[in-house]
Image (tube, rainbow, N blue to C red; front, side, top):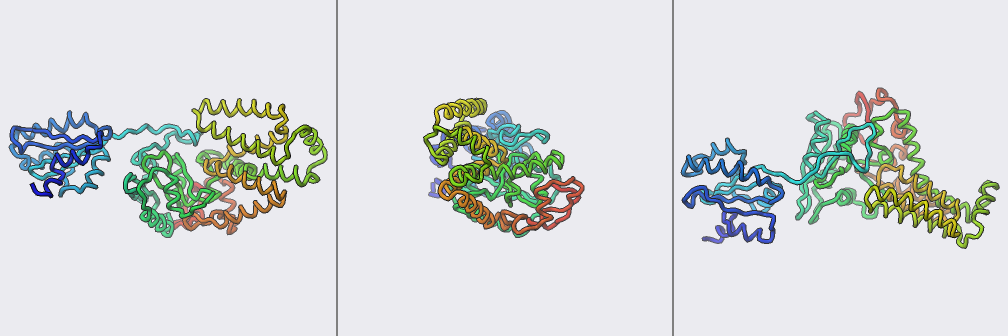
Length: 490
């Protein structure tokens, strides 16, 4: 044999040596007749390929044809008509071989005829679309994304029966070869945004992609970003709403969530359930979420600044009540608040890591017991516990979990500002925070738009929810190709 023949994939010994360390890859040589020309090679990945169909359907059909024809080459077309095979025009490369096997397909090789066939028998492990654990559905649909890209794209496609919905496929990661799908409406999405996301996906060069955060980090090119520049969701109905508004969707194989962009602070405060409720209620809860975001980040800082530096700004009766409750406390207001914030983060982390039922019980009962014990032991005052509780509850109302966790980090930063500079530190923190957000852009769209730059009409449409028949345009900040529509989703 020549060196090329030894390293050819039609050589079973070469195939067995190549996958020697992969116990889940099966390389089998089967004989369909008495002569050597009847030998075939089957290659598939155990657990990804439907092996039952291989032995029940494929092999019996092959044996049947070999009983009728002495040489396979004479019956190639008839075999293709009976078994759903894909004829490969040439010998696949090693990379193509890996792609076929690890996608779950069966590779059928006739070494003497140098014929190669791919049979779609993929049966990869996956679960059925069920309720999301992070985005609870009250009135909306209950089918949510799973860890399978094909299923996730199908959940969106069945809701958008239009040829203008484009689905582009990318493979990211030299080793993981993760499939990523880009979805957008061709006649709606801004060409500038489309070009930026397509260029960004092609520039990703790494050995493995396995999380949404990786994709977001590569695409946003922001090494030290604190706030998320892309939203995420597990709800197909929310994806349809975003596509119609002029955004794009990124589906990453192996993740039960998808990325939505461009995203600003106004989008991150919206809920997938908003489109299913009355406009008056949605308007109220959107304003409430904005207030809760402010309280979650700045309430501890403001309280510490008032108690430690500006007690003259507190109403006299409230000051008297708080002063009496702090009698016997050995710590300053700053240390008190720091202890409580630290305990809140410990409880939150413990609740996330434990199973859902136990986590809720631990957070509730543990918080009550330790909070009461801390007051009785004289470690913290009741007023500090109340402020901490309001802060924690306000953080839970935030829809986007990235914003919720980011608010915890920012809370400690602005707490440090107020601990040393008082109310001046709080004001400085707010100014720096707003300036930072004003400097952010998500695929060319300002993070604070339509607040900065100010577009009053767009701001009302973004913050408030009008009746559907009054929402006939898409958001101007996204620069859609088709700005008009009969109804709205924003």
